[in-house]
Length: 340
Image 1 (cartoon, rainbow, N blue to C red):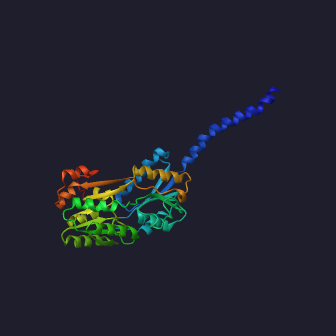
Image 2: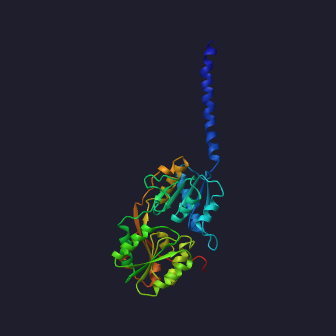
Image 3: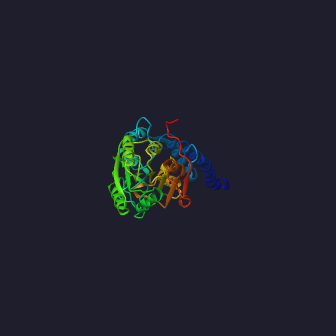
C-alpha cells in the first residue's frame, strides 16, 4: 500500500525531471531557426554593410546572439539598380519576419510593397509620407523613429550656415524629386525668407541634377547648398560631396554622414543612442509587438558637425570659437569612391 500511495508523487517527480530536461532542448530548437530581417537603405557599398553590422551588434544585448538572426540587405548599386521600389521587390523575394528601412523613400517603397510585414523605419515625417495615421498610434505596419524638426530647427540651420559660410545670400535646396514633402519644403522656404536668404528649389531625380544645380549656384556670389536627402539619384554621399567641392560650393545637410564624407557642415537631428533605440523597436516587433500601436520615437538632440579639410579646400577659415561650438569635427575629406 505505501508503494501504491507513492506512485502519483513519483509520477509527478519524473514528469518534472523530464520537463526540466526538455526545456533547454526546446529553447535550443527555437533558437536553431534564425529570425529573418530584411533591410533597405539608400547607402551603398561599405556603408550598407556597416549599417547591418551595427544593428546586429545592438541586437545582441537584447537576447539575439550571433546566429539567431539572418540579415538580408538591399542597397543601391553604384552603376546599377537604385530605384527603391525595385530594390524593395528584390528584398521581398525571400520571406522575412521584419523589415528595416532607412529614410523616407526606402520606407515608402517597402510600404507600397507590403501592408502585412512589420516595418521598423527611420524617416522624416511618417504621416506626411503616408505610412502612418499618427505618431502616437501609427495604425498600420510601420513604426520606428521620426526625424521631425521642431519650429526652432529651421532658422537655426540657416543661422549656422550664415556663421560658417561668408556672404551667404542664396541657398539651393536639394531633395529627391519623387519624395513628397510639401510641408517641409514650405517650412524651409518660410524660414529662409525670414533669415534673408533666397531659397532655390532643386528637386533631384538623377545625379546630373546635383552637378547642374551646383554649377548654377556657383555662377553667382554668395551661394551654398542644403542637401536634404539623396534619394535614388546617388548611391552615396561621397559622390555628391565631391561634386560640390569640385564646384567650390559650400554645402550643409541635416545628415552627419554628409560631413563625414567631406561636406563642409551639418546640423542634424539625432536620437540618443539611435542604433540601440532602433534595435529595441526591432526586438519589440520580433517578440510579437504590433507596429500599429507602437508610437514613433522623436529626436532627443541636435548635432553640429564641421569638416576642417573641406573648409580649407573651399577657402573658408573656421574660427576657433566655431570649432569649439561644434559637437563633431572631421579633419579629412575621404577620397571619392571610384577615384584613385
